[in-house]
Image (cartoon, rainbow over all chains, first blue to last red; front, side, top):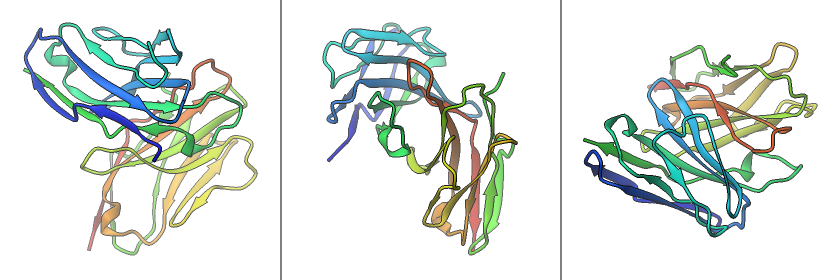
Length: 116
Length: 116
């Protein structure tokens, strides 16, 4: 089954304690990205990756790091989490190409992160 | 400038009625795709419908249809015969296909409440 898997799904952590949210996809997609969702703001892109070892900033990258050492994995790292990073996080993957249709973008189930 | 605008923070409808959720977009790219997602209270993003900028006909998927008016840059979602299970947050999103990345740009969402 095609899927994007995020872990953890729910996490409460303390300010300053490094954490990693993992994301893995089984569709051999080149493109992966992270979004955060906040009330009244919709989803905003944090980082994206076009392929292995190729990453770039999205709209709200401050306070986050990513890596893409393998095609299937795209972890999101919060080196020193702060309360303003409390949010719902989504990982997404899709192929890169000329053919686009709605069902080629796959979202993970979301990770609810609370920083106290 | 906001690229996706959803002007209705909340909508209320009774079961079996039709409802239209508004979405306007802004892009200078002639090639783009428009998406609608449903997000129930559990948080996952559920793909509903897709419209490509060159598609001649409005997209339909079961009870969902997309009223695409290219000249007006609008892509409204129409849900026919609303059901209680349609109560959720709905997001309109756009992908500009001339960009190197394939980021989705989201609106702020509309909360739909369906009552019996």
